[in-house]
Image (cartoon, rainbow, N blue to C red; front, side, top):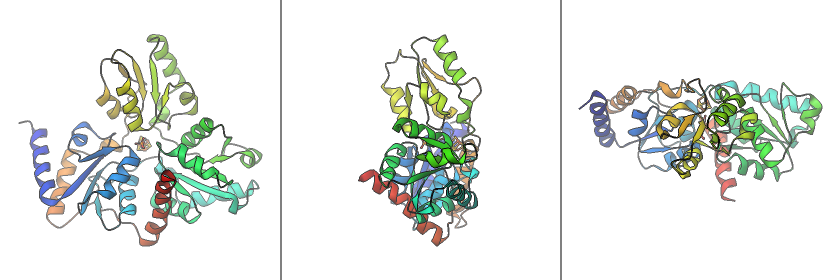
Amino acid sequence: MSSIEALKKSIEELKNELSVTIVAHYYQKDEVYEIADITGDSLELAKRAKESDSEWVLFCGVGFMGQSVKILAPQKRVAMPKIACCAMARMIDSTYFDESVAAMVEAGIPKEDILPITYINSGAEVKAKVGQMGGAVCTSSSAVSIIQKAMESKKKILFVPDRCLGQNVARKMGLKSAVIGIDKPQEIAQADIICYNGFCSVHQLFTLKDVEFFRKKYPGIKIAVHPECDPSVCEVADFVGSTSQIIKYVQSLPLEQKVAVGTEYNLVHRLRSKNTYVLSSTKPECPTMNETTLEDVYNTLLEIQKGNPINEIHVDEETIHWAKVALERMFAYLEA
Ligand code: 13P
Ligand code: SF4
């Protein structure tokens, strides 16, 4: 038995003994992904992890994902083998959030006419601010539905932190968008969706030139991308969707259909058949998603067994309260 297989076996035994649910995002390394009880996109992981019946959730992903489980199910104990941070989520904090609201007010939009929506890729404090202002969380798969619902309020949407997701949803819905710090105050005042200028450095790697390269090399190829990609890329793609939606789309294509996929490397590599390509000549690896190793998973389980847990997620009560309001609003909007 290889050392990886031996480690997987030990993890399996320990996990069952301790009644721990292991959750992994699609961007995790293959060997980590393979030992998980629950896998999925951010929306599915948030939903399913809070519903699991074990006391402990071991979340293999990035910080905001583990935090979301803790917020939705505060009675659960959540640990992460590595407290890895999503770089985009780190681009905004509560001060920058307040400054974005102030920039909209300066552009002539009264504070009571602003409805904030935060992408789930944000810290608990930002989610709490959004909850307090009557807003909601969205994920890449729920963004269009959430913004559709939010628009019924007739308010201006402040969308944080992903500029690209905000712009892509606006384009899809035929709405006007503007970006704080880039567009002029009049453009902000006239826009329906006002985006914070955050982005994912991994998804910025996919460019229009990559799309042109693949279309020229393989006429008839399909292009599937994540909505964190630049609007210029999403506009020309055949399919734009969350990680789960991309997987379903690629699997629905006939085997002989070539497809180039613009999202994180581990997911695309796992999908890879003869006719599936990574839409970039630069390896699109999310550095923090790749920090978690099988050894980390094993060691974190061992520390739980010893009664000395490491990397446990803690969020203060007030923040949990308001961040939960924003997350639960997303589920309520989706059910409405
Ligand atoms: P999904 O919600 O599509 O899983 O995306 C999460 C993410 O971080 C993409 O970069
Ligand atoms: Fe964050 Fe980008 Fe990594 Fe997704 S791929 S976790 S958005 S840094």
